Length: 422
Image 1 (cartoon, rainbow, N blue to C red):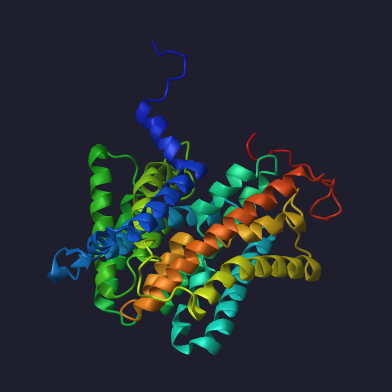
Image 2 (cartoon, rainbow, N blue to C red):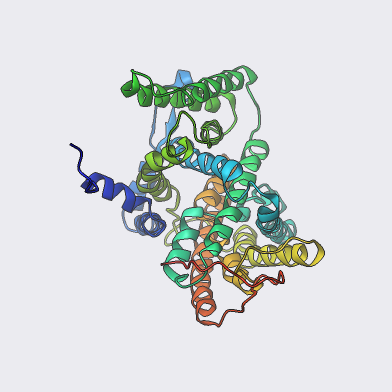
């Protein structure tokens, strides 16, 4: 006879839930970045450089990469798979399904990418035109870090604010992926690309099957297909993280075969802990080690100034400006219980670029000036920290203020009552 008492979660399940929390993910990223910066500026800085530059892997398969490249090309593909699954869920059954609800955060995301890019171009075009290739660096938003800051400092604010930030950041990531796939791809091997797409299609077919008798083998088969698709995408010349996004996109987001939860949700639960606890911290550790003390590179230069201004100032202006125009000139309004004043800290949160910004910095100056790369990474770290600190202060300021009955000014009293931290 089955017991009616709910089964207690095992220590492993509790740990997986813990590392999937917004706050935990952000703290792990921060610890990894600080450790990298400390090591890279310590008397043992040469050992850090040797570690990140150490190469291994089969050269015949175009996979003889440095440790840092394995992290950027391999581990980040896991993170982008989670992003792809999240995007699929939002487009099919979430906040991006209804354009009336998603219209404002979508336009805010576009504004939050366009203005920082213009800030960067305005500074660099005058001082260092050769570095214009890095225009996309300040356009990125780190979902993990931004949500962590909101979870810690946004207690008491409407839960709809988290949904708005998540929607904005997801659209930001989607546009960032398009930029990575188009701008930073120099040549394409279409045979390899076609082979990668075929494998991704096979992955999509298998992931939709009813749970078969050979169920224990399904994860092994799917992992093997994902690795092959990743390797083929890498060999094609398109950045391999795109494979992660496409693999996430083919996972069904609707209920199938009588299951109680969508397979996008199931994959998110299964893979997010690995992304949060392994992939992102290791990438941050191998990418954030900027030598400030004793380094040969000039940290303050047009590249770093452009990135810092883009993240700290451009993001806020872009998000607020685009939202104000959208709500003034169209019938679209902010979601229930969210006002324009709430978007000041949200706009600042989008300036936490970090993970994706570091990736774009590496792609921008790959094989080019180490001076530019070091300055870009230093600016990303500094800009992300300043944006996070300012956002935290603004969130507490916003939470202490009295809220109106109709925050989004749609003529109807707000009904949403859920709060962050409840």
